[in-house]
Length: 129
Length: 129
Image (tube, rainbow over all chains, first blue to last red):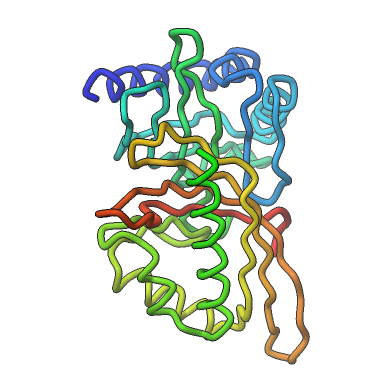
């Protein structure tokens, strides 16, 4: 259990690092190839290409950083885990101002041939945008 | 696995029935006592009283029906399951008009002393409200 938590924390750091350098392909590679993404105010989507395009679009819209904080992980240790967490986005507005947006998420994690990957990812914000 | 899917579908029907009759206490009773609710545009909350108050507030705001459609359940059959689904809300506006709002959710389910209950619940809408 402790090992899964640590693994998830490490992958969340990789997510944030890839995001910060604007590497949508590296972000998408952290998901399983059949992963589902459930973004706010958009339809459910799935698959690496759709997920990469979504995060590329978010980066293009000014989301510069996505910081993830895992607060609860439930797992039976058999290849599935469910994580509840909080996020902070650093968004650059068209005017060049930086604003923080906070929210929360649930990620279903799957051990995919020895590598833990995001199988499903949903989030929402704490306050209206 | 098939049994868990059927159980979840049945509880989702109970959720919708309790919602339709405006019974927030019955909705809240479907969650574990320490469940986390992660509603859009609101902070994370937890516990039966907070969850009951949240759903009572949603009913008071005009949400008349919440229909749930399970589309994917992953479980190891050991007391935890993760469900991905879609919902439709039937909302009565202050002017008396009825509008439908669609969205998607992830629920972490836990077998709580023999009864499957919602342990964590997050959702968001497909389009801006």
